[in-house]
Length: 431
Image (tube, rainbow, N blue to C red):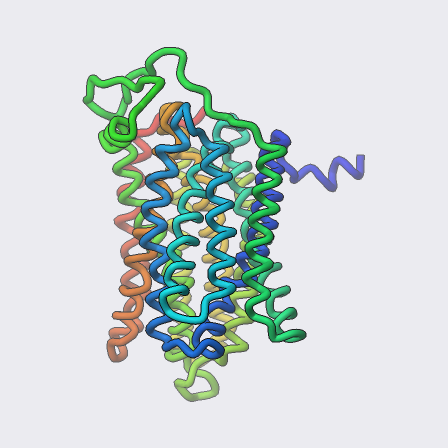
């Protein structure tokens, strides 16, 4: 009885889903090794300018767009499928890691990041399509939550272990080698333990309820027709609009908030901001809460429809942005306000991620899950293209305009909620 209570929080999922989670945790550790230390290494040790390093790292977002597009179509192809797409992703990411391990100039750094961005772009739509195939409406929300949990745990462990390895050896390039090996191990896990889950439709799928088109989904959709059907789905297009807002919000936390804490927060009566060590501790707190809260929040919110869950997430984003704004203007315990803000935003994030993917699966015809989830993943690419430049531009403004960024983001949540209420009427209520 005690054992049942201790493990009651673990969702009942198929073995292949758990294998994907474990593999993602493993490769996430390798990614965590390099994600936070690559800019330091190439700027301080290789000698490239910070601008060059920024351009090279940003190139991964560009190739990631193409990776996501191809992943959606290949995952829905009866002749290729989800499994091969995932295997190809692992090989490309492994190759990219080894290129980065040997990079000693700007062209090689760009080449490595272009490969890595394309490989990561291939990964997410195919993985989420496999999870959709292996779950039902009752377990899908928690399956996506546990997958994100594995990703967050891997990144957290990778950052910690990577920092320890650098402190002991100073061997930055070894991090990239370990990252490449982790992707090869993940390749082997998929090869042995994951079978193809794509099932071509036996007959044409019904018409999309949210569009006026008379075209039907066929079992062998061409690249062009699959995307055409998805882009005619009114509910999906409404969701894309709101999802780009959410991903822009997430980008603000990861790119703009650290700069704001560093340059605008009043510490001990000055405007010098938090130290690097303090900011690192704050975001360690944030990531830890992402891990701890992922499953409890997902389990609590599964009683609501996916658009309703996203509405609750949006409300938390508004509260979190407001608290960051208070952190910048208050002189009383700013560290406490920052911790509270990042705690609220952690809960907002874990409420958003599984609900968003589950909603897209509900909208998608079975034979077009890859394309639909590819569009969902593309929203992340767009959000990360908009978010950092927007935040950087705002923080270059003098006060009080720079501080008003957080108030503007909080107010924009009103538009997000309005769109979600409309989406909730388009999508049939979950029983």
